[in-house]
Length: 151
Length: 74
Image (cartoon, rainbow over all chains, first blue to last red; front, side):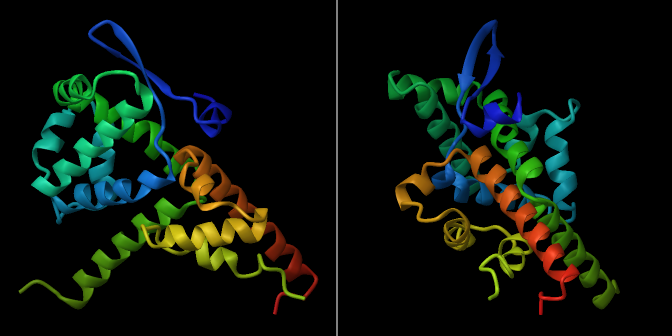
């Protein structure tokens, strides 16, 4: 999607079981949820650097369900909220219960699309803030391993 | 006179983004663009937010470079 389309808040189209759905980006109000999600992905495997963990979302051979399955209850709730808010924003006229059931059934596809729609903008448009964040995390890990040698 | 953009790069470029820093970014956006009502800021689409964030950082870099070349960035 062109950057201008992203800038003006146009959504992304995904295909689920042959039907097309348009998901709209979330807003600054929901950014804290994304920050929680990043921490959640970082947290579920503390020995793996965050960039590797996030990178796994793009790898075809690691099903998103596997990643989601390793999240704790609180992080699972964050994912559910992100899906619920995105569906509500994208399809406000639909029945809430129906949206929730849809969100639950297609959680893997939806969370991947939502992270891509919003998170790619963070990576590409943050002026390196996310890169710096990842660098800091990496540096912290390195410093820890230098100052606290094993054994 | 030192531009309000002078040290903005340090504030929003190097700072790790978290929920609390969103307040600081709002303030910094206002320094650059003028008054932005809270409701409007909160309802910016996330890609728009990061595009503006990037542009502000680029502008700060540009101004800082200009300041350095004229020796006024002290």
